[in-house]
Length: 329
Image (cartoon, rainbow, N blue to C red):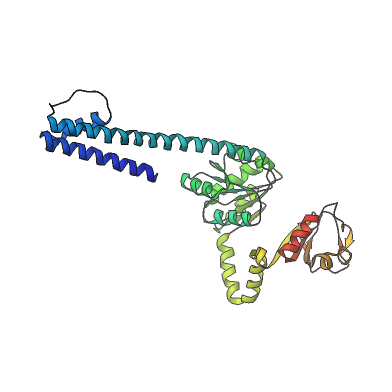
């Protein structure tokens, strides 16, 4: 674009010099001088609008050599920009469609506003695959610049969600700013994939959470409520809040809380917590256990607690140790 702007500036300069040159040498009007300059540098072959004297002819020869060269350069740059930009966009879209057709076990983030941006960054930091659904052209440019997979369109539209791979997705987050839009998104998502885990963003208005849950959301979160609670805890329990923030957000920089599902193939399935070797071998602390099919959690389980297939364990420890345990699961 910088080269194109420079070329256009040079073209305008040539037009100005040519027009003023004819006006000064031949004493013609501004329009006649501009007309002569244009037909000269574009080599269209029209006749002269006024007879040229020796000085005018010499000026015209110079204008032809200089002007034609730069006109061809400008046209070349314009063509190059249009063609390359179009091809790049077309190939980029084809490549995006191929990736979308293959993706599975991913998350779909509907809305790339302030909340959506943070969600996407967190998923990226955790090396999770995700697809962003957004309708704003400006936000689409920002998503593309970040290298995220995306689908342009309305998130409540069946075709848009199908293109985002909703039937193969692991979860969906409805994070647009409107409660009504989130309700439609959740209803559409659940209609297309009943097994999908769906989280809805709530504005915190009275009745909003209930409507989102009725629409089919598995979880409803109000960012404003969570933010307010976090601010209050920072005042009332600063050390506890710092510790929780460290374990949730520190990642590779410190301790981390993580949930892991115990499959049938796990070496320590149906063994006690003490015999599993999680504490000794991986240096991880099992903070809680959630049994399959149950909502309540077993906090601070004893060393005699049996780990069953399908259980979800919440462990606390170093990021590298957690990844070692996950690799064996």
